[in-house]
Image 1 (cartoon, helix red, strand yellow):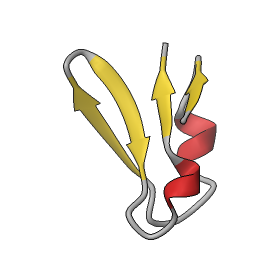
Image 2: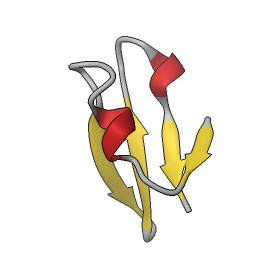
Image 3: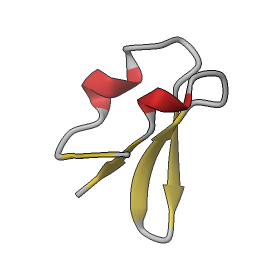
Length: 41
């Protein structure tokens, strides 16, 4: 899982990417290709 300052660019890498907020953190998750997982901050 990548840790990045900004997730906007990561969201546009794949059309299945979703931005999710969990426990005060922002995540990019992708069910079809888990390679694109990321967390902010």
